[in-house]
Image (cartoon, rainbow, N blue to C red; front, side):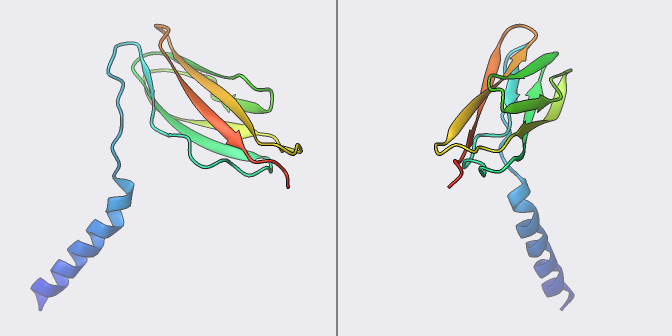
Length: 120
């Protein structure tokens, strides 16, 4: 009976932890930055935030190319970082997109595209 209960407990633990395990792309070059978060479905037309995880092998900066998206923090050091994109309400009738560019000290960059739905 103990073996059966232990097997069930192990199976439940494996099922619980499996969704949190995902392949992580590490930077492959010195002085580089890589995105862990890939663009998903568009965000709501309402104002909000979106977290983006990056990995950097050097100092880095981040900047939005759209005035309706702000980035925090705007720079960092070596390591894995959560960057928060804060976006304003889309009062327009069409979807919009913003490029957020993450740039490594050596000049290599990655772009995250945030798309926001229109107000219906």
